[in-house]
Length: 505
Image (tube, one colour):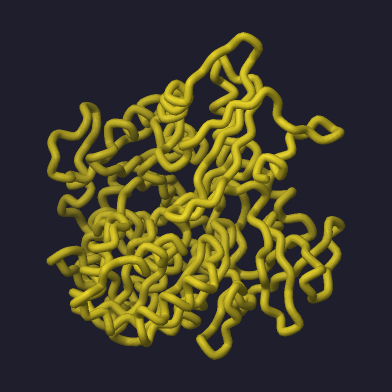
């Protein structure tokens, strides 16, 4: 079956070419304008001699150029590789090399770090979006070169099962893995998700979740374009910026992680007219029931609906459908076309009940094709034809799911996933470190904070400042520990495994 994700943008253009697609500040771009710009990018990317399926890495904040690059790559039959703008040069280099990317599109304010990483990878051309701060790094090109006048190509035919997006996600062991998300998978996820979210004609959504993350990409960007509605781009989460955007654009939908709802709940909204907001979509971490109650009390008419998903499942996997049908603290029920089971260690289905906690496994249209160039990890994750999430949960008698623990030792800091093993591997490179365990601790503002518990080598010395500087050079800003605890010895079990549960207390 032939299908290209760029088709949904074209269909929205045919339906209403002058409909606002993107609002950012005082600027509005129609669907026709977004398609035109993405068409220019597609033509210029093909002009570079890229073959179908070639990888284009996009490292941009929530700005219109993200859409131009994304749908341009799709239209040209290429694969987009979203990169977190906070990555260090070392991390950029790894993801570029592992993905076989040939083009990197980045933003001026973090172009120096990104280009430093790109320069270590053969065959990568770097294009920089002008942020108005000065000259891009030497050896790079301007993004405007990819927007030069050119014959706009037709949408390149792709198979529905062809990879559209290669999204990097880390486990608690090894390097980050590239989840291959297909055209059909992403199309189905935003279609089903959009229907569940209740998108209506005239809806305006706030796009403050990073578009490089699966939640923002599938549940915000794709769902908006699929439904032909409007999104307001907010480049970074700042309370006043979000409130201004809601008020000015008369926004109706807000998608966010729990820490964002906490911040908005505590914000001063005196004198603001936020009455247009009708629904809040929450994901990325469990949202406390008290936050839901207080938020809905502060913002009358708004209902918060919680869902669950992963990068490997293209975002939405389960969802609470409405205020009448939801169960607070639950992640809801599986969405249409998706099966979810709770299984024991032998992959046997468990019956309902809070005492029957097991692993969430998933199969359906939303599950990734594979981990790119990693058949071993793919086989392990897809045992028996089900994707094994590593998240522990139980189901009640009505089929609602309740997560009781996060994927292994995953830390979610301000909505960003931090994988302890990656941080630990960096700290093990420090000459004074003998053993280390990285854990999360509750944090009122960020949800969790990263803590490293370290035992030093005999006679060695290291200060918190030294360890912080060491990590900051090697890890993205959201990953490095803000607290270091020095102990004589880490607790261990009978096999010698470090007992993180004891460290968490």
